[in-house]
Image (cartoon, rainbow, N blue to C red):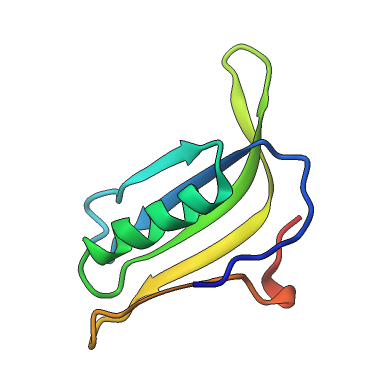
Length: 99
């Protein structure tokens, strides 16, 4: 499992899974620990059906009413292979980095 080591001023990491079944949302969460967020993504993908995908984003809380998250950059992307069930979580390619 590889994660990007790009510097960020984020102190929080948001992860979520997108299910191949469009009728339901996948699991997701927030962590203050980058490695835990990536591990949580991998664990959630392993529990989903093949074809599920997900991402970990560096985020920071934007104060306001209501408060919201500002997304600072993509940390990792994950996928569960539909044929083998293998889970892959990797740093995004430079062309797909969102800052």
